[in-house]
Amino acid sequence: MAKVSVIGAGSWGCALAHLLENNAQEVTVWSCIEDEIKMLKEFHEQKDKLPGVKLSDKTAFTGDLESAIKDKDVLILAVPSPFTRSTSKSMASFVKEGQIIVNVAKGIEEATLMTLSQVIEEEIPQAEVCVLSGPSHAEEVGKLLPTTIVVGTKKKETAVYLQNIFMSDVFRVYISSDMIGIELGAALKNVVALAAGIADGLGYGDNTKAALITRGMAEITRLGIVMGGRIETFYGLSGIGDLIVTCASMHSRNRRAGILIGKGASYEEAMKEVNQVVEGVYAAKAGLKLAQKHNVTMPIIEQVNRVLFEGVSPREAVGELMVREKKVENLDIRTLYQNSANVAW
Image (tube, rainbow, N blue to C red):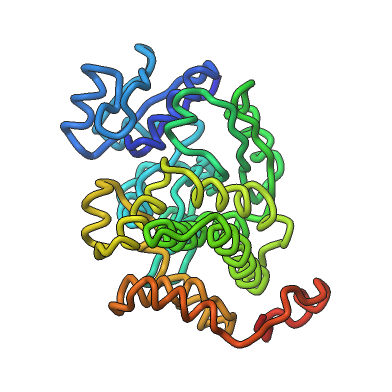
């Protein structure tokens, strides 16, 4: 049995807490929101964000960060990506040397263009930081429906340790050392999911959705390779797997927000209606800045930014994508590796 604290009591944090308690781990859930902790203590249920998923009577709930961290084997950082740095900063003085932190949020810090694991490492250098990602809506994990995911670590022994903690007959866990690839796929698929939702809101069909998924994955992959990720990661669970589920499911807050934007809402109005953090809005600017920094062509990411922040109509943005100059679909993969910084498909 491992002692695990989930730092963040949103839908994903509570879904993972439920999974882990069913795996016979000792689980604590922390939140900085007093009313949230009060609700969890009274009902053992995140009624606002994950209704219907009952947490065990054995699960502990606390608003005290020090007690949530002290003597725990694993800390799962499950706060929304915009709060990763501030939460890490608050955690830093309580984390012991070598304590394992598993980041499960998906995003890129806009101001620094750092992945979230890099943000955590900067704020908590004594920790061993890992990532967990893949096609895994909280609503389904909370119901213990079959799900497959990947854990990224720098040390193989840590990967195997985490695999054993998380894995069950309903939650299959693979391991990888490609943390940068996992995190880029996880963050940027949310931007493509916004585009997919916008297309749905415009009334476009399955052909359009398939095109966005396929070409969106091409964009993410070529940026990821330039930044040191491995191509197989982008065509794995945290890449194409997560992209498919986020673009296709109504569980996806990014797709739901995109639908509203396609119907004429601003991104602020869409986020208010969805009533949860829409990670793709935060990742869009960072993704475009990374593309510019690394001289990588990412037209879908570019057009999403234009719609979100420049007042371009969604229909005009789709038109821009369709009438771009003619391209070859795929370069030889060896060329992509050797000359990736100059690739323009």
